Each structure stands twice: as structure tokens, then as C-alpha cells.
Length: 413
Image (tube, rainbow, N blue to C red; front, top):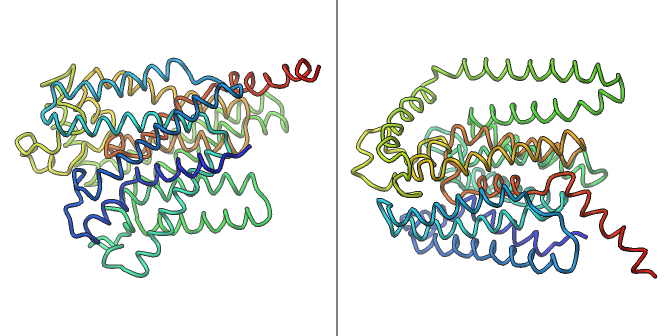
């Protein structure tokens, strides 16, 4: 049964964790700073975290009334270790006060991720569609009605977000969830999905983010290659399916390598490589524990170089190493690997619109996190990656679904 209330609360919390509307409201409507500590910003983040805790409590209470597949124990441990490391880093942070309240919000984000991991496929798709649909629609309206707010000075679209690299990933995720509905729905739902995909593509084109386009292409290709294996096996036989899948995977890998090589000397990527070198010098100063979660970029003494004044390392793993050292980098890596493994395994075993979307979404988020620091900024991206790692494995999911059927004869008797 679809739980509209829980899905709506999760969508609202995730929308808050896209951050853009909050910062726009603070800066452009209230004429405030738009910083995380702004009184127009942090209460909304705290409220979203509380919603995550409430949804997690709902899942715990619901588990007593119906059989549910359990989340991966390894994923739960990894998410718990990462969150506790962020909280503990208050003790050695370069800005303890900021680390304390920001990492507390991340505790609520982890609980929100665990709650979303318990949603069924339809609920997850509806939540993602609601978030991306609202983000894209609001951004298109702002670009049209208030171009002074919706456009960056260079002409690229940013909508209700701070820059194009915030809008574009949401638009790309909107494309992926729209394709899921195109494959799974009919009638007016398919028509609505087509409109949603068109709007998301328009926002993606207007934003002009190369990283979002590359991430979307890689994610779509990877999920399609894995998902096509079952269809090819039924039509042409297992041997042909394996050969075609291997060839497609090799081609996709080659295209990805070529795309990266072409972009390697583009100024944006060149500057990021130079920045990563500078950040690495800071990481080796505190390799085990880091400088404290989510605070390094606020300390002027640590960011004297011009490339260190951009507010992030533009890579989530590097960002975690900077803030939490090995203490955070290890569980972070485990979370990402488990998310990829869960999504890939589900698509491999049960290819279909839902598992294709799940795998494509995870692939997209992973590639995006290679070039952006979405582990920071109270980001929806990190919530979705944690949720993907926490989702029950396909085998456990089937056992949970079968349990009520096994018990029903005794209940009837």
C-alpha cells in the first residue's frame, strides 16, 4: 500500500536538503546573508532533520505490525560510523560550534536515509519525482519571470539555486525518474512523465553543466547495459547476452575514458586538479582525524590560496578526507560501494523500470560526487546514497514479501 503521508514528509525534507530555495529566500527575499547559520536557514534544516527522525521512528513502529526486510548490517554500521565520526569531530574541529550543529543535522539526514530505504519502489520514485519536479518547475518559472534572479551573470540558468551545478544535477535526476515513469506507466501518467522529462532536459540545457551531462550519460549507459542482459538472453540466448553485455560495457568504458581525456585540459577540470593538490597538502597535515567535519572552508587562515576560496574541494572523498581523515573516509567508501552493489545487484537479478532507475540514480550520484562535494551542504545527494546502501538486498526483499504468504494458512485456520 502506498503511504502518501510518509512519502510527502520525505519529499519535503529532501527538498529542504536541496538548499537552493532556502538560500534564495534568505538572500533575495529577506536580504540576509544566506549562510548556513542564518536564522532563515538553519531552522529549516533542523526541521528537516527532525522529520527524518520521525520517519525513522515510524519505520521502527511499523516493523512490529508487518514483516520487513532488514537493511544491510554492514551499511547500517558504515552509516552509523560516518555519522558518529562527524559528531565526534567536534572535539578536534577547527570550528567546534559549527561542526556540532551541522553534524547533528547529519544525524537526522542518516535517519531520513534509513526511513527512505524502507520505502517500496513506487514510494521512492514518487519522492524523487516530487522533489525534482518542484525544483525544475520553480527554476523554470524564476528564469522566465525573474531572470535577474534565475540567471547567472554568464547567462547560464541557476533557477532557485545558487549556481548551475546545483540546478543541473536535480534536472538530470528528473530525467532519470521521468524515464522510469515512461517505462512503467501508461495513459496520462506517461504523458505527464514525458512533460516532466522535457522540462528537466530544458533546465539541464539551460544550466549547461558539463559534469551533469557526463554523469547522466555514464549513468544511463551503465544501467542500460546491465539491464539489457536479461532481454538479450531471452531473445538471443545466454551466450549472446554475455557477449553483447561485455562489448557494450567495454564501449561505454571507452567512451567514458575518451570523454574524460577530452575534458582533462579544460580550464575547469585543470583548476580542480590543481585544487585537489592543494587540498591534499592540508589532508596530510591531519591524515587520521581531519580538520573537523564541514568547517575547513569557513576558516580564512586555512584558505589563503585563491583556489581554496571556492568553498569546497569539488570531490566528496577528498572532502571527507579533509574533514574527517581516514576515520570518515573508510565508512564513506563502504557506503558508496554498498550503494553501487545493491543497485547493480537488483538490476542484474530483476531488470525492470524500478531497478533500472535505482541503478542509474546511484551511478549518477557517484559520478557527480567525483567532481562536486555533495557529501557537504546538507545535500539530498548524500541522503539518497545512504538510502541506496541501506536498502535490503534483493534476496532479503523477496523473503520479506513471501513471509505473510507463508503465515496466511495458519492465520485462516
